[in-house]
Length: 359
Image (tube, rainbow, N blue to C red; front, side):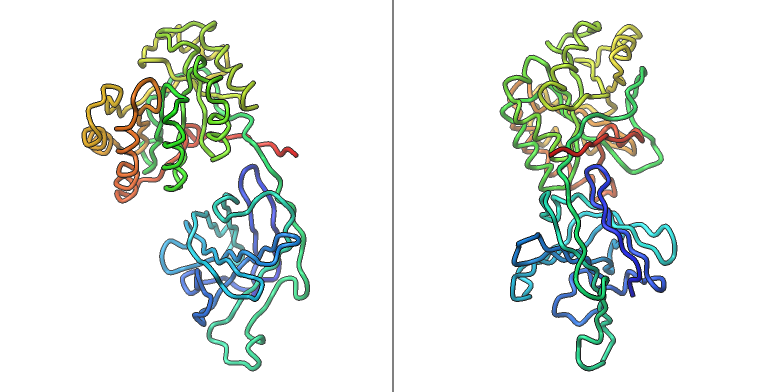
């Protein structure tokens, strides 16, 4: 039974903290419990002035720490849709649970919500049926404002070179170079549908042509890195710093990562990037998709070369990128089936994005 609950916001993510009267066996909870008579523990949210609500439910027999249930309830209390969504569930203490998720994955837009916690004992035979349900607060609801946030920077922008992340974690980073371009929205759509973050290393001379796409990259939880102004190999500070300024002027985001065009790097390049507070990033998996070898070749080269901590190079700009786009869904599905998770380069390296509220 819930005894204390808190709803808060940490950067981009919504945090639901719950303390219970005794430790909860997550596997015994119904993740999508409507109409099934199972035990459940759910957070109910109703937009102010809205007729229906969204119900986020914990638990499930499979992967309770990585998924949450989402039920959409209409004004008459009927569940009209249900699915599972990505989430992180931690148990810092035996009687405490903390659920973390991206609000957009639950269809939660920035606004004010009325909320409460509801638990149901599926083995209860008491009459009336409401006696088997407990809520927190016991009467009424609480108010929470979900604020819009935007990425404004990231940590880890010190001088140095990384070709991959830690090898002890089954996590990889997908990266895309030479955009933004007309192909970039298609890549973003695949990433969104697959719930995978990525890092886009952008060329300054292309940025002003696609400002909305750049803002979309960040809005969807992906990352932007500096790829020089004119795709110049062995660039100096004067070719690097203006690209950072362009990113910031268009998106309000200051990148902390730099990728040298062609992977051409030496101590002078690393030093010039460091002067602009940028970490130099190359890769350890290169399918040579720039040469348009075909979708099958791109797919095979990526999945065969990937290993824990890999930084995978692909391209969303600089030429025809339909082959790479066609290969991407299968690349993600295969790597995920092999047990890999996905992160931005900043996340892979153990750093974090910085978000600030606005509006």
